[in-house]
Image 1: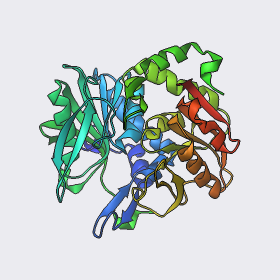
Image 2 (image 1 turned 135 degrees about the vertical axis):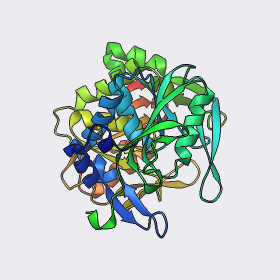
Image 3 (image 1 turned 90 degrees about the vertical axis):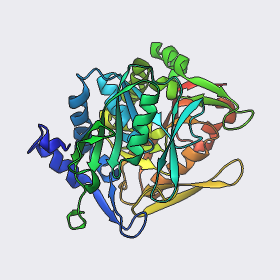
Length: 191
Length: 182
């Protein structure tokens, strides 16, 4: 569900966040209009507002785990975790985490990839959120949800800054609620 | 300089949360794993606070973080001190126009990239990473920032491996670390 439909309709912070995102055409390949959040990170006020909106939503939901998907989920997740007093758990590409891991495969357009989490990072019964910069098909987020559920955590929600067309109208992913701040920018609107 | 030597009372808690994983990524390496630090909200907060206390009010407008563990510590620091966060990434990850800096690995070379236009000449910058070993990556990061005319005020890392003498590779730039591991 989009933030604008869920209590933040007309919130000026959302427009500023959207305006701070840059569209890069044909990256990583022809036809893809890449939503670049690095320009959002350059705008301190908009970056802070992005984090604050998630923090305001999650601070009273008894969340003890913020899981962030490598690598852009690392740019948003830790600040949210620190503000709500939760632990931060990085979910990484294979062979990056040094300790014992559990792995979850997921589908790419061509082939499969894999997401890993450290064994022991999350305890059964913990309430968790998953954070990433953008949700497209939901493949990566679904893998993240499965990792957390496999160790007995309860995934309360997935939070993303941007949600692509494919998820518009979908309020849930794998049965889990999805909370999205903004839609993708069109090429005409980029700066 | 290190907070370790200053004996701030929070340091002991931070150091105790870092896990050493032997023989990762290869035999003989004692890997300093900060993910266990991130599992302790107080220790993680203390880590960020120590950097924020040092850099707030020093007119720093850029915090550059090195992929990927620098992305965990850098943004919270940037947000608290009112600076922008600039990710320094492995090749082909950043979508826009980039400048690149090559650096040496034990075997071969690697490359760090930064978006053109992210940093303006004259800006005062920090470089943040979880750990400094040989200093090669930090050096490449500093070079990127200096090439666009920024002033690198300091490099900030959670952990230093002093035996690898990374501090000496920083061309006289100051290095601030919280803990040392021998």
